[in-house]
Length: 245
Length: 302
Ligand SMILES: Nc1ncnc2c1ncn2[C@@H]1O[C@H](COP(=O)(O)OP(=O)(O)O)[C@@H](O)[C@H]1O
Ligand SMILES: [Mg+2]
Image (cartoon, rainbow over all chains, first blue to last red; front, top):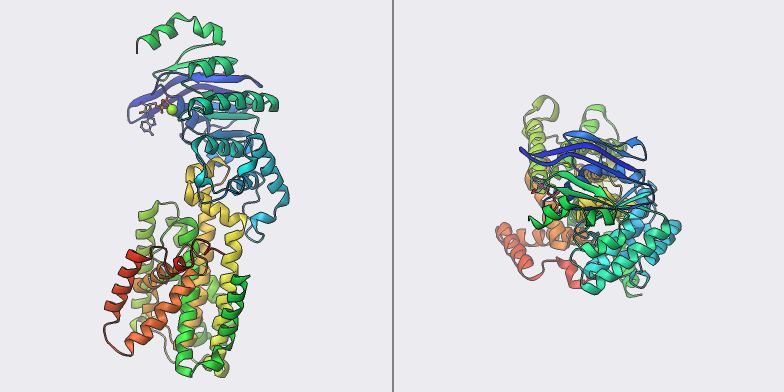
């Protein structure tokens, strides 16, 4: 589904990513873990075209997408929800998601008809909000939502184009314990149910072990280990890297 | 509904004004309508994209000079110069926007100001073509548009059309896309929007509308002057929008009415208009940061 090979990224002489290899199998939940500053977010940014890699390439379902601008990448089957929950705060929850649906369908250039008069996009947006459990809050302004709900809006928007691959950067960050548990259940049920491929980063080890089919460990910009949760748990290099922090 | 009632009342007053007002007051009303169209055009960019253009005078002036030059040199009848005025202004906005909308906020403001001053300098010095600082004077918009009543209705019609277009865009997916880019450009890209095209389209359209306002100014003054392109003209649109409330669709028009009427009133009595204006703006910023429209409460968007 996703193949990252030989990706290097330098920031002013500092090497944030150094020959990273990553293969995400279709239908799998793949976790990218590593200490803060390991390069996880940078790798995501390279995948989605926010940063251009200094070397290496990114393929999505076999197609080379290296260097594509973000808006093009997300319209070719990749959904993204980033580290900080993000939504368009001047709009209602429903308008946020409706806009995302229209953007995926290439209808946002329409300046003639009110957004509210796109019934298909509207009902698609309602369905997405239903999936993420926000059907009760559709008409609330996005700015009034607590962080946990904002993350759900963010994920609903990421799903607007029915992506084959979803990228979640720290979906649990900033959430309370109960919100975390709910979010893990939500990711498990919804995304498995949809048959999506998922690539995510997370610091919460328990959640990673519960959700992931495969884990890639990143350390100082390099891949340290790759395997199933059981393999990773027992990998001496990983234990050393994390205990050596 | 209450808002509908108020809307009909305002529309009736606007339509009946030529029979209610003496000619002098009507002249002032035309000026208010011209500024209302100009400020509404400016605010399309300011409110929807969050970008503060300090160069809209260039588009106002481009529309005015296109119209004036075609009348003077090619003897086009006044009304037929409207499409040319709108097109010239829109095209100039497309060029200036191409270089400006990519830049972040403060640079955008400085760049649009710099471009507009550049255009002003050319118009101001190019005697052979634009008449330089003498401007283009002695234009005859024809018997009909020489009549202040007819001109009032023309200005009202163009303002109403411009307002309707801006309102339509505001509620459309295009308008939402602009506000998404304003709220959070990174997230906007991540839902599949490419900011540049949207910003450039909005900026060009806004410039074209400002050109229509410049076109009206030519009939009102029967002349075109380099002043039309000077930065103080851009400032008028900014002041009107902020005075009325940039976050309300009708805010800039309301601000224009107050700005022009108050200006005429004060200038007829004292020479301290800039001082009064300064005090009004100060009071506004301190007590009514959402502009006059803020008096109507939060639901002022429509
Ligand atoms: N835009 C940038 N400019 C300079 N350095 C950056 C930039 N983005 C990330 N870095 C650096 O790259 C390293 C990896 O950061 P990041 O990818 O955010 O790590 P992680 O997400 O794994 O915590 C860090 O040392 C960070 O300071
Ligand atoms: Mg990170």
